[in-house]
Image (cartoon, rainbow, N blue to C red):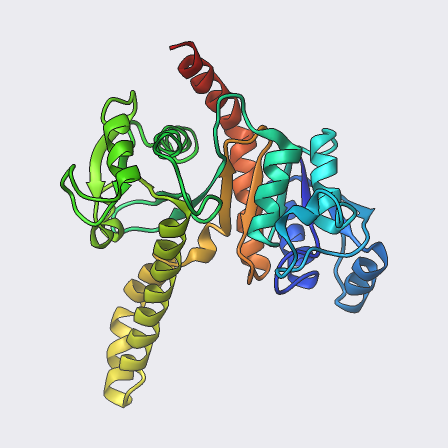
Length: 332
């Protein structure tokens, strides 16, 4: 199994990306292709005493910045670390690609270079998130700011297959993010999507309000990319505020510090449960090759866990099952 890693994507590149890739090599037994300036990668490796294992470096010219047009990965910056990574993926020289770079550029590269699965109208970004019960899948998290009803319907299908194949949920509950549970609530597009989804082959359970998402009332939460990204970022922010607040309470005085000793195991368990670093990033569903968007601020551990998602993809043959499902849809 060979994973292509964009060594210059993200805020902490290349150091944390290289470290994360090496952690993944050790833990998952994979081979890695690092794309980016070979000179800078080797200097980083030397300066930080990193031992490269099972690693090939493919030289690339520059990187895609957050301010760059997303389409630059196809033309002006096709020779960047991300552009070269997608070229290698399209040519079959690697089995999956992981990058912490620009979400827009990754989406464009995945759509036009890795290519869409036949029948998929729009690939989407799907992020595994914690809940009070079990991990849930939120999609779309930013690839498509505006969605037609049929896009949302398809997101539900791909999300259901992800939960079945990757997280082994037998009959995933798929819900549509909305401002009310009633079928008549929401924008025209959301109401039309509801009508399509209630007749779907997957287990559609209706609308879900934002406050119910953290309780895990649905296994898959479907939204357009604008709303989904807001849900994701708010979710992460609130979790961080709560954990910082709890930490502050127990640091108040000597008595509170002593009390903390009695509940520290439970606090650490809760912190791990709601830690986004456990999943590392989001997957692009609807394209022919596994593509994972790691968090832009990923440290080594977070990036390693993003690589883990690519490994899950390949181990469980998810793309094949999505292709079969859409082939069946097209026949109907």
